[in-house]
Image (tube, rainbow, N blue to C red; front, side, top):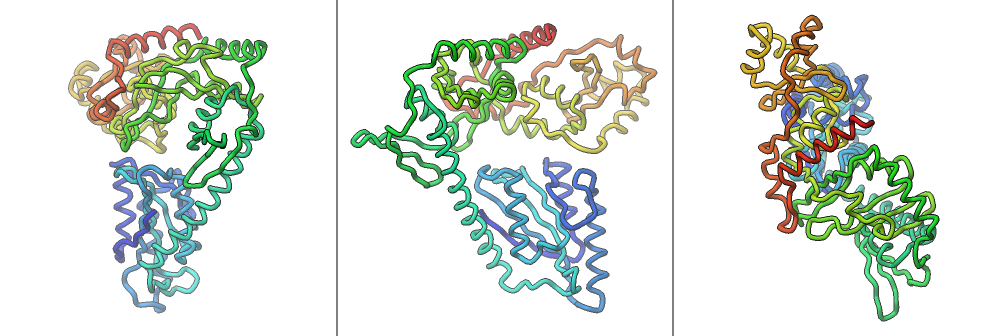
Length: 464
């Protein structure tokens, strides 16, 4: 973790800079502290005015320093910290730096290879009107971030040990292989010392040594239990897609965060967790965890993997996610439509807040067009249909998605209904760089395979 103090000024230009990042690069306002603004509705210009005005008024006749702005960044290595983790670390760091009770904002940036946040505040102490002490500020920035990380590491190791003990003492396994596979999925590294039959379990350089005799190993799943789990899986299969999605780790080219609609529904509804086991880019087996009975099984012993987990796996690339994040999807309907169009789970698409800036522009362009066809051709847009039959305008070049009735007006609904319905189709150009990120052993699905899956989903939706 690295903390840096950035250049200061008298006009709070850092707020303006971060506002541009939010609008153009997918940044996100994470927190507004000690100010009467709501995070979801706050306007950055209002925050900038507040910080500047408050600072100038309070320092009047009490301090002569000019650079009122405090601006810093905290970054982690790669994606090891989420935006929420960075936000919490930022709050702790600001408190140690003397800014815990000051008005400040925290903004998450996702435009580099390293997750990081920006913190902007005022150097004027709101209690005294004097400048907050900044001697050894740069030195303290690094010192305090290291202190926070060391404390966090110790707390994390303690929590990891508690979780591991629960998995070893409360859960039963049908084999050592199932136990190893399950713990691997929880980011524990496991290996067996066959000389003395000890099991070594590591996480974040924190090692535990367990004797194999302490594990609850069962020979196989009982027939009654097997039928119960099969029934729950078959029930979910009737309403859930088997299509698998995954991300690619840039460092080792391995897939991670593998999920599907079926996997998510089994976890939420029945407490059954499925952990796919991938070999050469294909699903070969899976570990099934029943959290209600605290049992872990070899999945193929219950239902063969190819019956519930579809291969090949659809890769969600960072470039594709960046493209989608440029859309202002401010309603669940828009997010769902983008999910269907770009073949990406809804959970990966951020729901935006506030009114779209493109709506008025689209209205003006339509009013200047003579016909609907002319408008679509002139703006290079498409008219697509959502699950409920609602029409939306999609412009991929400008990253615009708007409800058609909001642009055309209610009185134009008849013309919209008569317009040709262009079905969503995958734009492979947006997947640039995704295939290159795949390992040599991983094969991306062909267009034909994508089309088959998409048709299968439509039929399934029709049966619901």
